[in-house]
Length: 420
Image 1 (tube, one colour):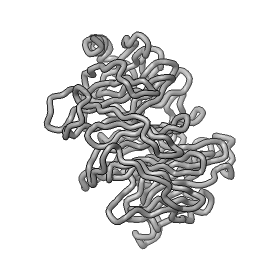
Image 2 (cartoon, one colour):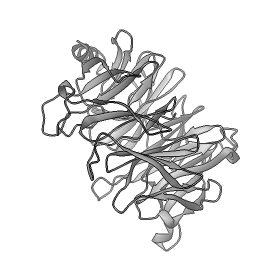
Image 3 (tube, rainbow, N blue to C red):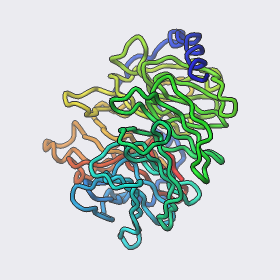
Image 4 (tube, one colour):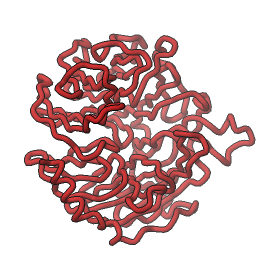
């Protein structure tokens, strides 16, 4: 029933994006407000967690100096975004396992396969930690709940049809824990006609409560706010969690993980009538009516971040290399989409992470020194002005992940970070 309701609502609202004028392209100008936009204290940032090939690494947020915490065996790589809980770093690895690493002793406390080790497989998610339990999904659509202290497997669930543990390559989104339930979103299995679903599970047992067919695969991580789930599944849907009725829908070719602040919802998207390019959309969260729209280059969807009345986004310039990202960071005003700053000379390839007045990401300072090798690496940026504060080029050409920042006032991650 939800499938048909989604399509019906979409037909009614499909043309709403044409009602709002789009802003022109960004200009590389000095910030319109050189003052501190956030009244933030960067000294609250304790350390940054990222990866460097097979190693989990922490980075000093003030100086950029790095320290390896733990290195896995050759060809076992951390996947997704790390998480942190009570002095322990949690990461998924591509052998289909969840790993707990002590920051104090720099040792592996435990690793637990998501039922079976499976080297080089696909479909891993980042780890969501809630109330001392790790929730993650691995290869073949198997989601697990693991005790964060002991590593004990509490329960597992297969998102494959009829819950069977077979060899269908099913990928899931990061599990969402809300109240007494877990929401898991499965994609269409490889070489299969099985549709995507929203699986609603009992948080304590993993027992299936409901399974709802979706009209399209998710194109970003769903977000729950005030008992409404904002579902990026080609289009953006707002769905009442209790009745499962669609409140509103916004038509697109694809949309990113949304960000919500007060009465606004912001996301990157690819418009229906122009699938080569992308936009940054700001809608009224209650009605789905566009407030403003900004062109953001080619059709790569980045996840924006909202801090106070500022939206951090990425303008995609595209690359000649397949699957490579070549974004330009920017900041705009949440209320009207007006530009605060834009950096044409900085190319980024991981989502920028905000923490107490700073942005952290991996990228390339295009107009840096004459030596290109010296211009690529891990960056810290002043979030108010876009000024580069430091660059650690130790990370220049190695595979690193989007970071998280552990601070005295919380854990900060990209817009799709589930936290703990």
